[in-house]
Image (tube, rainbow, N blue to C red):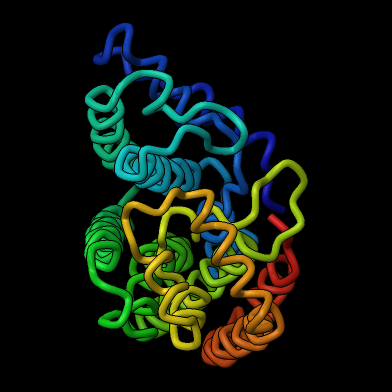
Length: 314
């Protein structure tokens, strides 16, 4: 069973004396809580294919590497988005400054390979290749996201958005499942199928995030943050198709105040009944994931994981 308290303790015990007094910001970024979904996925696939011989100690460097990689993406994402808060506390960018946050993000990425160096052969080389490919794909997804933000809405397709979130969010979830299987020396065909299933789970997860931003009921969170920022989510793209010329001008105009844009967008979403349409779209994305689970031996385990995420509210 995945031992979250033990994993949290292991993250808190990591040290980087090479960074001197800046080491504390590595710990700050890494110990901010969260679902720890990526290392948990790696543990599940490793345990399934390794069976009774699965060892927490053997897998721990990989699990830590995955969380380090994920944290690196969050730190840099916060810099690019100028985000003040994450998980209810100041972001590293806000707590320090832009340059420090960028460098700590770089250090987190380097620390990924420090941890992978502790993985025993023969899994070390395939794992380095797996996580390196995932990191590049996440960067590609982030670049696509930046490009979409600068592209006028009429020129943005739903498929371009889906491609972006598959890279930005799906790639690392897919890599986590693949990495656990690689550690257990599972067959290559199984590893590839796991990666594909994980990518689809990641795509569903991001669609869910975008939906919850507009229609979620999390206490203390302001709805419509993505609208205020002008993010071209699937809901935004749908709304644009039926918005009035005046609404389009206010939504796309950079001089529109974020709060005004949020109010207009939420009212438009309600008028077009996008809450119901969005739920249907989420169900379709989830079905795509379920179909992919049929192609792997641990399909039943993946479906159980999917069900635990399917109706989340945060």
